[in-house]
Image (cartoon, rainbow, N blue to C red; front, side, top):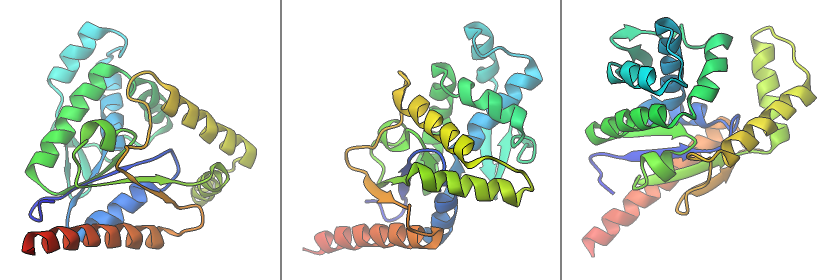
Amino acid sequence: MNKEKLIVAIDGPAGAGKSSAAKLLSARIGADYIDTGAMYRAVALKLIRTGTDYRDAEALDAMLESTLIDFEAGRTILDGEDVSGLIRTPEISALASPSSAVPAIRYKLTALQQAMGEEKSVVMDGRDIGTVVFPNADVKFFLTASADERARRRMLELQGKGESADFDEVKAEIEKRDRQDSQREFRPLKKADDAIEIDSTRMNIEQVVSLMSDIIDAKRMDLHGHKGD
């Protein structure tokens, strides 16, 4: 493990707490948090703005050719513009899900993500970070939780926004998303062979991040110990 630069991959199903854990962990270990979900949302925003149909391969390739996505102090930057507040709408969510499965889009964003990992220490979460984007990541986690717990968390999130929702409907939507993510032909969600699985069903976010941080510290200590032999 390179102590000067560290790549941490966090994969797992929707609602497991990946983004929250990644944000806190990155601050704790002094790395940049790369929000891959925001990247796919930014592409969805550009699809809408340019009127590009993601099923039109030629038009999509032309659009992606001139697309640059980066992060600055937690803000999502699309082609030089801060779009952080524009990519969290239902319209963007609805388009980001199907478009994110398009190989051309995943290839483009994978290249951008890998370039970020070449330059600096990063914590990155998603569905295929440890299996595809960074198969040689220094540390890989697979964060999961029961469908009931993930639905409960989603309910609390919606209630916090003043929205009402039915628990059974929320749970059914999560289970549908699980099936879509794990059964899709191109880059399905799966646990990397060398990933450390953490079940957060009975853990709060601080406990999850503390465990991840301890595992990273132990790996660093182990490496330094071997160097000294």
